[in-house]
Image (cartoon, rainbow over all chains, first blue to last red; front, side, top):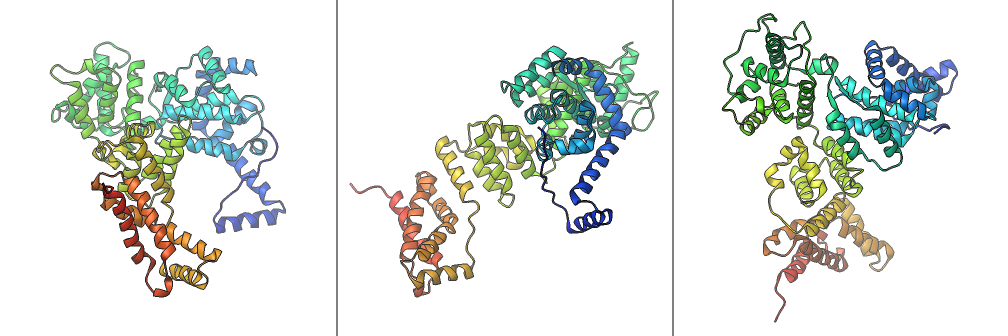
Length: 73
Length: 457
């Protein structure tokens, strides 16, 4: 666990060009733009009402086992 | 079945670890996670996918603290997005996870453990609600009505079965012989639509719904219809609630026959998934099956030939257990010709090994011939002869098959043929202008005939 991971990303050329253009305009490395995009995608998911409801249900359904496991850590 | 994607997994990891997603993305072995998520997809059944995710997450140990909680949450979430849930006993779960972490408990054991614990969520929601067909909803409406009439707050499997029986239009009614006797849905919409009120089910009925979900997943069906529900009732051990005079085995067969045709488009994908399911049980067999799955260009007959070679082994069982694959490959074809397992296994291995060898083009052969002509004793010439041999291994298999009725094992014929092929390569003289294949055929035949002929007294 930990450290920085290299990810091989296959993109079609058009998307890669757009990604390069965004990075150039913003003056940032492409990898940073990709990381931000993924993080934004994850944030969107976290705010999705259905995801939140299912997560809430899972957390309450399995509250006891999750508490037990947290105690072990 | 819906799987879990990277965004969902990272969002769950963020929930457990309280680390921001952007940091998590740097922290996580994203490739490992992607591979794990890809392995927990259809055609695995939901409880199998959840077990795969649970074990895989613990093995990956993606968080400094909280990987066990993430594993539980990811498995639970995968079930939840499919309208399913599991009743996990906290102490038993903790003990099981410790066993997984210590390498004592594998995916198959976790799957078996999870199997009876998974059922449909109540009330019906999300994915399950979306996937139920109109006839299934009609039957559920009637089941709810029947439960209500009998003063039950929750519908039992018997209520559901009677709902299917009285629904009168769908495949379940046809399997039960009650088609054409549709009952009015008093108190429900006249049209077969999702009821306004979500019916409540007993635990047993929720298990039946989950089993119906499994049947649909196994069959490659998007929609869960009355036929799947009927099979769920029977698979759930409720055959006793069938009306008098109906034989459970007969109804089951009829219900299976009446299911819609399976999706044939993804045989390679299904084989790959079976391989992923097998990986922890028998890595060698899984690797071989993955190779077959890769060979999308090869014919069904070829796949049957290779798979049949694993007769009696775990792999054949695993392949036959997937109804779609089994039907696509032809149950009859898989069940014929008992043969010596070792011979067959070696043959399959050999066929898989040479599967990538392709016939040389005319230009490539000419080029090789020139290199051999230039100096027949040079290393280049030797390399050219080797390539001639390799590119004609399939030719040997084809010729050997024609001698197979002789009773000599095919692999032995192929070996003899390969000796002939090597002799042909040694004697090949491009300057005579013959194509290699032409002269090789007679060398291969001669060599095989020697193997087939009884030795002189």
